[in-house]
Image (cartoon, rainbow, N blue to C red; front, side):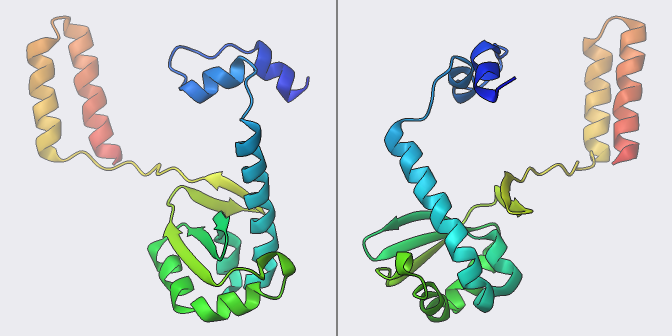
Length: 170
Protein backbone atom coordinates (compact mmCIF):
# COMPACT_ATOMS: atom_id res chain seq x y z
CA UNK A 1 0.00 0.00 0.00
CA UNK A 2 1.35 3.42 -0.87
CA UNK A 3 2.28 5.71 1.99
CA UNK A 4 0.08 8.53 0.63
CA UNK A 5 -2.96 6.27 0.49
CA UNK A 6 -2.28 5.12 4.04
CA UNK A 7 -2.12 8.71 5.29
CA UNK A 8 -5.36 9.62 3.54
CA UNK A 9 -7.30 6.67 4.96
CA UNK A 10 -5.68 6.46 8.41
CA UNK A 11 -7.51 8.40 11.07
CA UNK A 12 -5.27 9.64 13.88
CA UNK A 13 -6.42 9.46 17.45
CA UNK A 14 -7.63 12.51 19.33
CA UNK A 15 -4.17 12.92 20.90
CA UNK A 16 -2.48 13.51 17.53
CA UNK A 17 -0.95 16.91 16.98
CA UNK A 18 -2.21 19.27 14.29
CA UNK A 19 0.38 18.19 11.71
CA UNK A 20 -0.49 14.50 12.12
CA UNK A 21 -4.20 15.26 11.72
CA UNK A 22 -3.52 17.29 8.58
CA UNK A 23 -1.35 14.50 7.15
CA UNK A 24 -4.11 11.98 7.83
CA UNK A 25 -6.52 14.22 5.96
CA UNK A 26 -4.19 14.22 2.95
CA UNK A 27 -2.72 17.68 3.43
CA UNK A 28 0.73 18.43 2.07
CA UNK A 29 3.30 21.04 2.93
CA UNK A 30 2.91 24.33 1.08
CA UNK A 31 4.93 24.34 -2.16
CA UNK A 32 7.30 27.09 -1.03
CA UNK A 33 8.05 25.32 2.24
CA UNK A 34 8.48 22.02 0.44
CA UNK A 35 10.84 23.66 -2.05
CA UNK A 36 12.91 25.23 0.73
CA UNK A 37 13.11 21.93 2.58
CA UNK A 38 14.32 20.18 -0.57
CA UNK A 39 16.90 22.95 -1.15
CA UNK A 40 18.26 22.78 2.40
CA UNK A 41 18.37 18.98 2.24
CA UNK A 42 20.28 19.23 -1.04
CA UNK A 43 22.76 21.69 0.49
CA UNK A 44 23.15 19.43 3.52
CA UNK A 45 23.99 16.47 1.30
CA UNK A 46 26.49 18.60 -0.64
CA UNK A 47 28.25 20.06 2.39
CA UNK A 48 28.84 16.78 4.22
CA UNK A 49 31.61 15.50 1.91
CA UNK A 50 33.08 19.01 1.57
CA UNK A 51 33.38 19.49 5.32
CA UNK A 52 34.54 15.95 6.08
CA UNK A 53 38.15 16.94 5.31
CA UNK A 54 37.98 19.71 7.93
CA UNK A 55 35.61 18.25 10.52
CA UNK A 56 35.91 14.49 10.05
CA UNK A 57 33.02 12.52 11.56
CA UNK A 58 31.43 15.70 12.86
CA UNK A 59 30.40 16.59 9.30
CA UNK A 60 27.82 13.76 9.38
CA UNK A 61 25.91 15.61 12.09
CA UNK A 62 25.61 18.92 10.23
CA UNK A 63 22.30 20.10 8.82
CA UNK A 64 21.85 23.22 6.69
CA UNK A 65 18.85 25.12 8.07
CA UNK A 66 19.19 28.48 6.30
CA UNK A 67 21.02 29.76 3.24
CA UNK A 68 20.46 33.18 1.74
CA UNK A 69 22.60 35.91 0.16
CA UNK A 70 26.02 35.62 1.79
CA UNK A 71 25.06 33.69 4.95
CA UNK A 72 24.58 29.98 5.59
CA UNK A 73 23.32 28.59 8.90
CA UNK A 74 24.35 25.14 10.09
CA UNK A 75 22.66 23.20 12.89
CA UNK A 76 24.57 20.76 15.07
CA UNK A 77 23.33 18.49 17.88
CA UNK A 78 25.70 19.60 20.65
CA UNK A 79 27.22 22.80 21.96
CA UNK A 80 30.68 21.24 21.74
CA UNK A 81 30.22 20.45 18.04
CA UNK A 82 28.90 23.96 17.37
CA UNK A 83 31.88 25.54 19.14
CA UNK A 84 34.26 23.35 17.13
CA UNK A 85 32.71 24.53 13.86
CA UNK A 86 32.87 28.14 15.06
CA UNK A 87 36.55 27.66 15.87
CA UNK A 88 37.22 26.28 12.36
CA UNK A 89 35.01 28.93 10.70
CA UNK A 90 37.51 30.03 8.03
CA UNK A 91 38.60 26.47 7.18
CA UNK A 92 34.94 25.46 6.79
CA UNK A 93 34.27 28.41 4.46
CA UNK A 94 37.29 27.51 2.32
CA UNK A 95 36.13 23.88 2.13
CA UNK A 96 32.59 24.94 1.17
CA UNK A 97 33.89 27.23 -1.56
CA UNK A 98 35.13 24.07 -3.27
CA UNK A 99 31.62 23.68 -4.72
CA UNK A 100 29.78 26.22 -6.87
CA UNK A 101 26.61 25.98 -4.76
CA UNK A 102 28.46 27.49 -1.79
CA UNK A 103 30.49 30.13 -3.63
CA UNK A 104 28.38 33.12 -2.57
CA UNK A 105 28.53 32.41 1.17
CA UNK A 106 30.97 34.47 3.21
CA UNK A 107 29.47 33.97 6.68
CA UNK A 108 28.68 30.81 8.59
CA UNK A 109 26.25 30.94 11.48
CA UNK A 110 26.09 27.90 13.76
CA UNK A 111 23.16 26.95 15.97
CA UNK A 112 22.50 24.03 18.29
CA UNK A 113 19.50 21.78 17.67
CA UNK A 114 19.46 18.95 20.20
CA UNK A 115 16.73 17.11 18.29
CA UNK A 116 18.78 16.26 15.20
CA UNK A 117 20.92 13.18 14.95
CA UNK A 118 22.12 11.58 11.75
CA UNK A 119 22.10 7.78 11.60
CA UNK A 120 23.36 6.12 8.42
CA UNK A 121 22.83 9.23 6.30
CA UNK A 122 19.30 9.81 7.60
CA UNK A 123 18.45 12.55 10.06
CA UNK A 124 16.30 11.28 12.89
CA UNK A 125 14.84 12.90 15.95
CA UNK A 126 16.79 12.16 19.07
CA UNK A 127 14.58 11.65 22.09
CA UNK A 128 15.81 11.65 25.63
CA UNK A 129 14.66 8.23 26.85
CA UNK A 130 16.70 8.07 30.00
CA UNK A 131 14.49 7.53 33.00
CA UNK A 132 15.45 9.54 36.02
CA UNK A 133 15.22 7.76 39.35
CA UNK A 134 12.54 8.84 41.76
CA UNK A 135 13.90 10.33 44.93
CA UNK A 136 13.03 8.75 48.25
CA UNK A 137 11.07 11.87 49.16
CA UNK A 138 9.03 11.65 45.93
CA UNK A 139 8.21 7.97 46.51
CA UNK A 140 7.13 8.73 50.08
CA UNK A 141 4.93 11.65 48.96
CA UNK A 142 3.23 9.61 46.21
CA UNK A 143 2.69 6.69 48.59
CA UNK A 144 1.09 8.90 51.25
CA UNK A 145 -1.12 10.61 48.67
CA UNK A 146 -2.19 7.25 47.23
CA UNK A 147 -3.20 6.05 50.70
CA UNK A 148 -5.38 9.14 51.15
CA UNK A 149 -6.91 9.33 47.66
CA UNK A 150 -7.38 5.72 46.51
CA UNK A 151 -10.24 4.06 48.39
CA UNK A 152 -10.10 0.60 46.74
CA UNK A 153 -7.64 -1.45 48.87
CA UNK A 154 -6.41 -3.72 46.04
CA UNK A 155 -5.93 -0.78 43.68
CA UNK A 156 -4.14 1.13 46.43
CA UNK A 157 -1.80 -1.81 47.12
CA UNK A 158 -1.08 -2.28 43.41
CA UNK A 159 -0.32 1.39 42.92
CA UNK A 160 2.02 1.52 45.92
CA UNK A 161 3.78 -1.62 44.70
CA UNK A 162 4.18 -0.05 41.24
CA UNK A 163 5.70 3.13 42.68
CA UNK A 164 8.12 1.17 44.85
CA UNK A 165 9.27 -1.04 41.94
CA UNK A 166 9.71 2.05 39.75
CA UNK A 167 11.94 3.55 42.42
CA UNK A 168 13.98 0.33 42.64
CA UNK A 169 14.46 0.01 38.82
CA UNK A 170 15.78 3.51 38.51
